[in-house]
Image (tube, rainbow, N blue to C red; front, side, top):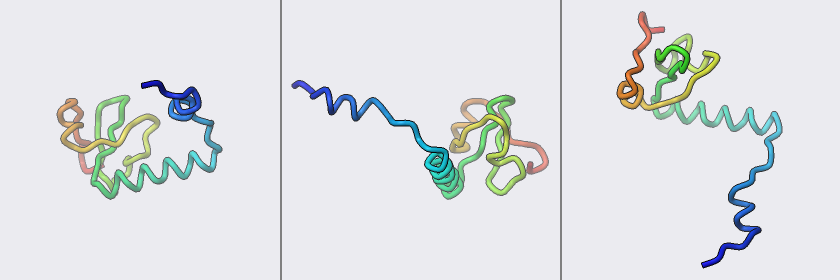
Length: 82
């Protein structure tokens, strides 16, 4: 079965997002992660933070994950509820 070039192109090439579109997309991902109760993992040091804490989503580099995946990756919870 052949796939048309136009279909392949539309599936694999994305147009750049405007700064406003990117901000909206990041906010939507953040809201979804909070709603699911995911933790924020600081990828520089392997420490994870819970929703509502100071560093949740506020480190220079990181990612949202379910807590059990952070635990499997051997990340550690932040001390003192930070």
